[in-house]
Image 1 (cartoon, rainbow, N blue to C red):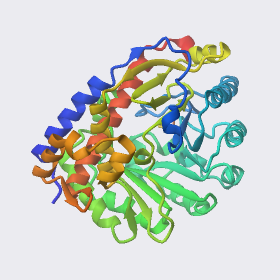
Image 2 (image 1 turned 90 degrees about the vertical axis):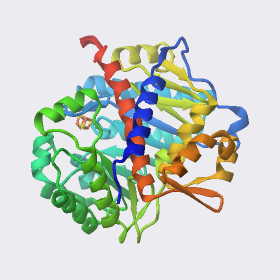
Image 3 (image 1 turned 180 degrees about the vertical axis):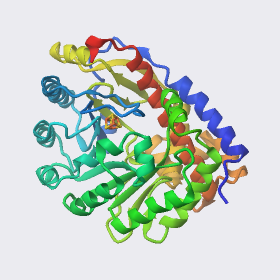
Length: 427
Ligand code: SF4
């Protein structure tokens, strides 16, 4: 039985402390990202992340980097994105995959298409993944993205009308039934459709979660990601006011229900991602891309052990691009040990940490360099060894889901702090 036990709470507390400490970033004087590491580029694949920070209206619980949509500002922003993309190309980077996040990525479909066409011209792109919301599920839009977007990830969160109303999504994206109809009409237009669901809303019962899981099993999208509710400090108090307290015991219990319900029809790709069995299995992006370049306001890049964060101010971003600079504003370098610890967590979150692959990718003998961490995980029965790999136990799957949740909450905290400093003219 999966539990939020002492070792999970202990490791979570360390993770919370570490993310707070490690995500404390300093201002940078750099005007461009460093070029790709020549020694690594031969067999190294980078991911390009692109951020579109505009939404028609703002949801109460959102901690992403987003601004109210104004067409002139958004068109100017897309022009800047394309210029920053060209700067990345001039530095010598190439990418086989792109991830477009938002905001509402398709808020200006013509600009999105133009930007992706440029990306496909500049780089050896094999796969483009794009986030979207339930309002993006329109045949015309998806047909216009064919050939440009390979994987569309839709943030549905739940099909339960009561929860949709409480999190202010009902009026904006429609009822659960309306979203189901839109999914039925659009699954199959693009090569891969991923549905994002959230579990462990305050007071969520096994019955309401079961409704979401059975609905998704009937719909059979190519992929489904089922995240625990992640609440950064400001979101946490808003949720507490309108829905009540988030229970970690409930989280463990509901997670076990998810694993039980999904196992017959879906293959598990990571602690929270599942691929429909009769269709092709797709990668889990968090696991497969250890280095990435981010373009656009508020995006993150991770290169050669350093995290870079672009400015969250739209005004400053546009000025930097006009001055032929990239958007970077802050940075933080990490020790090799910290990077290895992070990668061990991510690999185990992805279902397997292979000793040989770890050596090839990170030049590390993980059983020596991370001896204490592995011993502790083994003693607490979160991992076991088979052949050349370590695998998470059922309890371990929950632990690594919980650790990734803390990591993402830490990233949200960086966004919140950065956005809190913005003035009217920055937006
Ligand atoms: S649509 Fe998404 S990005 Fe925009 S405000 Fe709502 S939750 Fe945030």
